[in-house]
Image: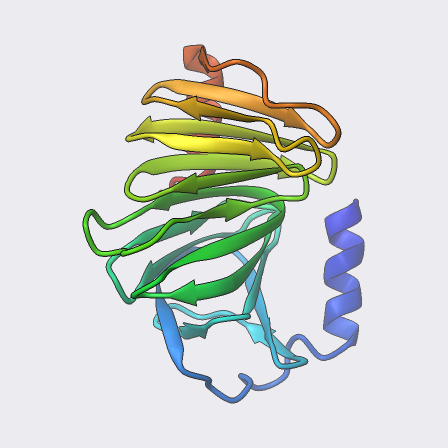
Length: 200
């Protein structure tokens, strides 16, 4: 219901207007399913396959929407349904960050191409990496992080407490709570977050 209200609101504000003026691209849409929108410099539009995206663009997926973005360094980002993501602080040479407002995202960093730390930030937690594959599932007051490959450090935004996850491990972070100790997730939970970040 919340996303439905948001989508009605953004359409009323002109989300179906022509594509906003292009800034310097940091990535491109390589695959998409369902309804996906983006906003740039106060203007908004439907996102299309092949569309270039710039730093500070905001991507919003509907309940039926998924999108895969390939960044300039070859890294891949899959945004699942009912999600809102800000392409913040992205720089090919100096690493970069994605701000996940809510929803789910899978990030596969291209090995050896980023010279500095990168990751995903949510209201509850920061998942920072150099080269790996991981999934972040976030609500306003909670975040969950699962590592498919590599190593990820997860830090609570308000507590400052950190844990380091290895492949197959996950953690849950409340807004005012430290990350739970690393734990191997069960098959059902892994399959759920993987399905939500996989296009048919």
